[in-house]
Amino acid sequence: MVLLKSLEKSLDVLDIFLECNKEMSLNAIANRAKLNISTTFRIVSTLERRQYLQRDPIYRKYKLGPKALALGYSSHWTENIVTLARPYLYRLQQDFNETASIYVAEGDSRICLDFVESSRSLRRVIPAGESLPIYKGAAGKVLLAWSTEEVQQRICEDYGVVTLADLNVIRHNGYAVTQDESEHGLFAISVPVFNFNSTIAAALTIAGPTMRFYESVRQKMLFALNQYAGELSHLLGHQRGI
Image (cartoon, rainbow, N blue to C red):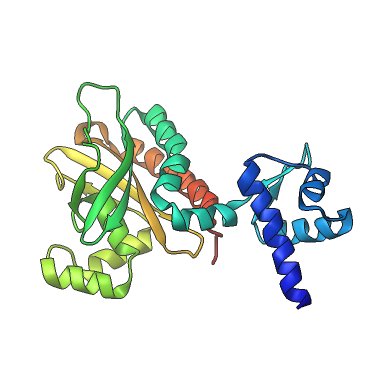
C-alpha cells in the first residue's frame, strides 16, 4: 500500500509536467502536487535519476527528460521523431548543402518521415511520404541491418536482393552507403537512430549526386551523421552501451 501511494505521487508529479508543458522549480512542483518539499525532492530526484525528468543546472528548474519523451514516442511516435529530428536535418543540409532525410520501416518498405532538400539545382528530390522497398538504398539497408533476425531472414529469402552477410557488414561498420541504387547517379550515406529500448527507430540519411560525394566529403558527412544520430538517439531515451 505504501509503495502504491509513492507510485501515485510520482505519477502526479509527471502529470503536472504533462499539463503545464514548461520548466518548474522544486517549490512550484511541490505546490502544484500539494506535497511537502522533502517528499517532492525525493520523488523528483528519483525521476531525474531515471531520466524521466531533467534539471537545468543553472536555473535549477525541471522539465521532462528523455525517458518521458520515449513514453510519448511510443504513443505519438511519428510526430515526436519528426519534431526531434528536424533540427538535425537542417544542420546536415546547412553543413553540406545536400538533401537530408529520415526514414522509418513500415512492413517491407521504408517511409520518408521528413526531409530538408539541398538548395542546389541538381539535388536529391524526395516526394513527401516517399515509400521504397526496405532492401533498396542506404536508409533501407540500415533499417534492415538493425531489424530482428526473423525480419532479415524473410526479406533476404523473399527478395534475394540483399544477403545476411551484407547486413552483417553494415551492422559491423555502423552505417550503409549506396551508389546508383535508388536512382542512377545518386549516392547516399545512412546511419541508425535508436530509441529508449535500444532498438532501431529510424535511419538518418544524406544523399545527392555521386559526383559531389568524393571521399573526403563522405568522411565528414559520416562523422556529422554519427554525431547527430547519437544526439537524436539520446533524445529518444537511448543510452550508449545498453
